[in-house]
Image (cartoon, rainbow, N blue to C red; front, side, top):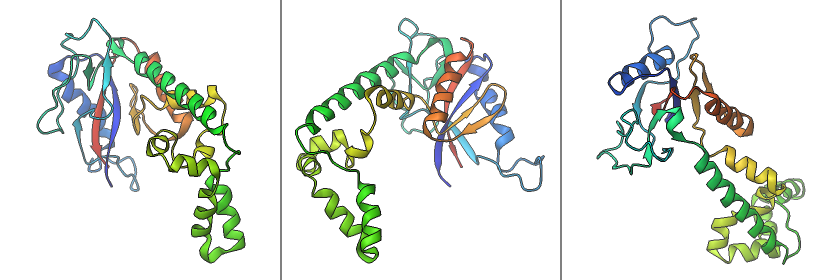
Length: 238
């Protein structure tokens, strides 16, 4: 049980009817609904709030004053004072989905390039799981400790761990995280920018999951929505 966010897609609706429309879309997945489809049915949420904190949308430049943009947050107290360029939701056509993806593409590309330039100065490093598997075979009782020690003895890993800024940028297991070509690395990171843990589609499907397939589906679905579709971030307790 915990709180997570869902992106709710709705037919065109004005500000006065937004919460009612979200409620109608969410109701079929309420834990306590009386008309359960079958005896073993389990719902998805117990309560929800309009809230996109941490996953706000960018507003398409020139549309910052559109009254259909969702700028209030039911969860945050006191309410967050959003800049005009940010919102919790609004019509799909005035949400800027491309700018944050382009920014992440640049960031990811720069990070991958910087890591390759840095790592080329050292012998190739192996990912942690290589040492964990070997340690479990050789010394099961002390496998974790042995694996950590062997992993950290690698010159590249030592150099990164000696510099907190490098470890923050490249991560604690860079041989694993950067084990792909530039295009694949950038694509994977860009796909993760917009998705929330779940998506509620226009036709009433609650879709959730993780990994690249889900993230690609999420991006493709939002990109293909009609421009007047309302897309809103919602925080729910599951």
